[in-house]
Amino acid sequence: MKVSILGSTGSIGTQALEVVRDLRGIYDIEVTAVSGNSNIELLEQQIREFKPHFAAVSDEAAAARLKTAVSDTDCRVLSGCEGLCYIAAEAGEDMLLSSIVGFAGLVPTMKAIEAGVDIALANKETLVTAGPLFMNAVEKHGVSLLPVDSEHCAIFQSLKAGSRGELRKILLTASGGPFFGKSRNELKNVRREQALKHPNWSMGAKITIDSATLMNKGLEVLEASHLFGVDIDDIEVVVQRESIIHSMVEFADRSVIAQMSIPSMKHPIQYAFTYPRRLESKDESVDFAKLASLTFAKPDEETFRCLALAKAAGRSGGIMPAVMNAANEVAVADFLADKIGFLDIADMVEEAMGRFNNIENPSMEDIISADAEVREYMHKK
Ligand code: NAD
Ligand code: MG
Image (cartoon, rainbow, N blue to C red; front, top):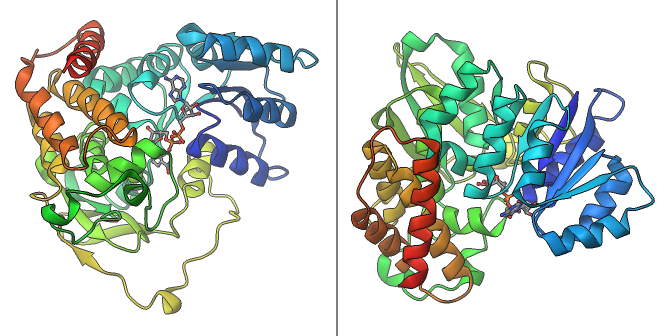
């Protein structure tokens, strides 16, 4: 299988390359393209080890430097959004691992779908902002869509135990993040260093902050709703502190099926690469005796308002999820730059959602303009 990786220098991208290494000798998988924003040193190492035919770098100056650095290899270096779209759609691969962070992943991922490339999807923002258009394109072009988000991979696996008509609800698990149990007062002065300390997962900065605000879970509710065609109100978020149960589904007879494994993104990545086969993994087994207990709780949507805001955006539909997402991307970047406080993130998202009028059944152009307008509005404030 030939796979192109959008965002190969990130947390998901580098773990995907570890999976490719782990699978050597037991599964035929070749990396045909890698990409990143600007981390040229790492891209060069990846090009020398995995020998892809293409590399795309969004930053033009960085692309020029990479071109010189790898001029002795057969790898063609492309740049900008065009470069990303090319490696997503036309590099001649079987599968695209879409693991760029944020809205920047939308256009290249859509191009891959339109070119008939199967998608392993880590970038949840694409489904959140353009869910109906994305799912229609998947159906129209007959591509396979394999979720790489751990919860969605768990739901995908659990759903195999019954039929769609028998499904009652999805139980989407959440770790609760670093601030589980804290009050609004305690969260007023938290800084980026504290928010970046996730108890169970090591991930990119944006998703780690989203996990601390519970926006990540909000985005995941919308993601699950589009992926599995389930109403937002039939998706229940359950805090599962140890991140061993990655999500569950409940069927008509009240039987609950869960997928469990240690918290490792290599599981969903490998499952997407080898589906429908299950191959040996280098991950450890769950040691239940050592674990002793699994703890559950209800999420606190009053303190962590981003979860409620994302669900509200999802219920409104239209461009509202794109408005919510763009406002969150700007707010998270501002928080990471120490420009705003932790609780301001939800306030900024709410303010943007109140400010923009919705558009029903938006086109891709409507979604792209909404994203741009929200960013412009937030930067002007
Ligand atoms: P990350 O920040 O570690 O990596 C992001 C990658 O995208 C890097 O390769 C970076 O160079 C590239 N990139 C960023 N902005 C870009 C732009 N404008 N143009 C081109 N390339 C750009 O992020 P991550 O944690 O790997 O997350 C990637 C995606 O996967 C996110 O959508 C996240 O929600 C999702 N996801 C991540 C995890 C995880 O464990 N890290 C789990 C589930 C889902
Ligand atoms: Mg997840």
